[in-house]
Image (cartoon, rainbow, N blue to C red; front, side, top):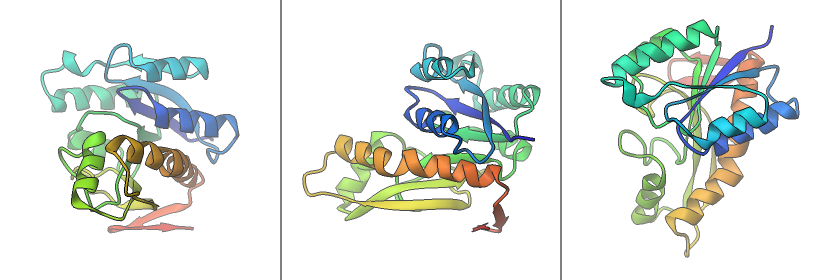
Length: 208
């Protein structure tokens, strides 16, 4: 029985593409991406899904009164699709606790910084890299973690760093972290989950 994966997106879907590429190469540990669900109409990520022969769905955030109503609808959709693992790949919605309760330690997110630095509410996209450069850190990177009820606060599965260069801009740092870390670490973490090699004990993730 393969692990049925849904990838939740809002935009261009570069991390989704990394997952689709890993799947095409047989590197998702037996997992299968069966659905890509976008919070926005016309997100390019849906085109990437179509190109890979994966079903794409739109559940527009703007059609729901608040994040809770949206989360409840999302859980309903995921259950209908019989999803085992949820992956957030550039999904710009802060889900409420209903999603975590439905999928405890089965929602994976990638964050473009070394958590607990530059994370939590308000830290997304280029804002993360602007903050890192403003602070003057010498290393940044990305973190793949399980999603908990606290924003960017769930158990850490994997982290990898990159050097921050003297002439970096938020855009160049973002690009390097994506290429060198996010696009590799996220598929690797998904594969470990699908192979049943991850155990969570409190805040610690143990990889067999």
